[in-house]
Length: 348
Image (cartoon, rainbow, N blue to C red; front, side, top):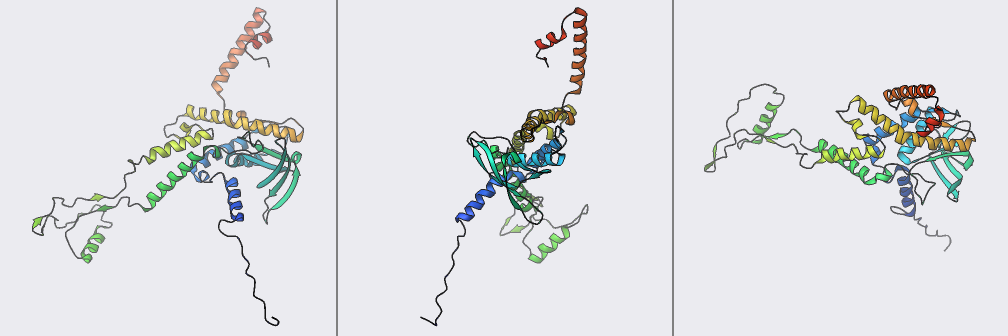
C-alpha cells in the first residue's frame, strides 16, 4: 500500500473504575481512614489537638531525638492514622507513606516516602533504622495500627452527616422568613409593599384590612397573621443525636464528654485531664518509649503525667503526710518500715 499511510492506531486507556482508579481509591481510603469524613469535624480536631499538645509537653529522658515537634507529629499521626513512622537519621524524619515486609509478624524492611518541598523521595531502610509506632493493632495484622475513628466508623460517619445536614439547613432553609396574607393586588403593589417593610425597625405601618368580600363570601378571619417558615428541627431530634455522636467520638479518643459541657466546673476539668493523661496518653507514651529504647539500644522514658500536672495535688499531699506519720510511728515502735510497706504493695 505504499506510499499510502497506514491507519493510525488508537491508544486505549483504562478510565473510570479501572484497576488504577480502584488502586488509588483504596490507597486514599487507607491514608485518610475508612471514609475520611470524621476528621473534618471540630470534635475530632479538638481531640487530636489534646493528644498533640499533651505529647509535646511530655518529659523525655534518655534521648534527644524525641523533640516536642517530633512527639506532636507522632501524636497527630497516631490519632488520625493509628501509626507513626520516622526514619532515624541525624534527626527523626517523618514518613508520609510506607510499605513494609514482615517475618513472623515483625517488620523487617521498609520502603518510605519522604515529603520534600520540591517533591517527595523514596528510601529503603531496615527495621532497625525506622521508628514505627502503632496503636489499636489487630491480631490478623499486628504490624498495622488502627486510628480511633476506624474503630468507630459508624459514629464518625453519622456525626459527619449530621453536621452536613445542619449546615445545609442553615444555608438554604428559609430561617426567619414569614408570609403575610394580602388581598389580590397587582404584582407591582406587592413588590412596593415588600420594599416598604424593609428596614422599618420600630415604625408604624398602616395598611388596609384583608377582611374583604371576594367571590360572594368573606375571607377567613385571619387579619395580618404572619406564618413562620422556619423549619422545626426539634421534631427530628437532630440536636440530641448530634450531642450523642459528639460524646461517643470524645469517648473514643479517651476524652470525657463532660469536659466540653457548658456547666463544667474546675474539679471536673482536672479529672478529665487526669483521665486523658492516665488512661490514654501515658500508655501510648510507654509504647513510644519501648520502641525508642529498642531502636536506640538505650533506656528511654516518657512521662506525661508530671508535665501535665495530671494528678490530684491535694490527695498526694495527704498521702505524704500519712506516710511520714506511719514511718515515724513504725520507728518509735521498732517495726521495720520496709516490711510494713511491702504489705501494702509499696516495696519499691
